Image (cartoon, rainbow, N blue to C red; front, side, top):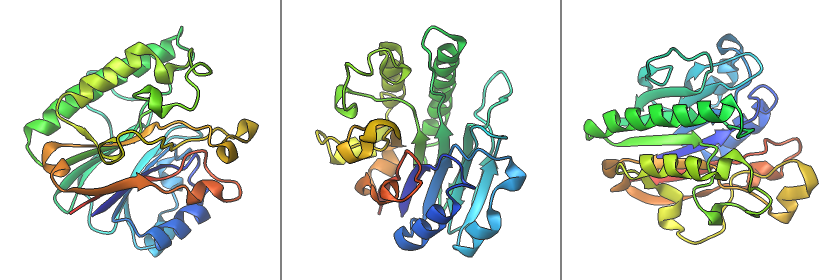
Length: 255
């Protein structure tokens, strides 16, 4: 079972890239983020023509997440549980072939001296609580998406240049570790412990060609999912296309 995550940075603008990649890479499940369209405008017909069902929660011009799957998506949940209702479309969860899977678009959090950073940390605390609930089921679970977190210095092309960015702040990394230490496995880092692997390259300053990137798209596996992990990586091909997303797909494969 191949599960991929991809921040497409506008599903309508990148629809052809997405459907072509679905046909060539043929993942069983794809987690999308930053759809930038309302739910009703999601290109379901094009996705269905490529062989995928979808569970979508969109938002005009911003955010938006989806799960695409070759098999039925069961028991979908369209918001991260918490005390307050979400006004941002950042979380969708469903079960595919017995695996519970979430597509997450975690807040960026910049600038750090603003309510946006507080919102990011609050969201991560809610995600921690949801992760605890999911682990308690003892089912295979995958939490995937654009986490907007560089967990370690190896996940940043230039830490000095990013020093004031919310993605690398000690509070951000501590919140990510708190989730990870519940018992989750970082699929890519487990199989590639020390490689410089990136999933995002800014459009500016020719950063993709220079490989000045960040690893901010992650797939975290519950113990029963981690027991089935056989491969993981990043597909850089879509990032090299004309008018690409600034992210590229990260993926893992479970037996």
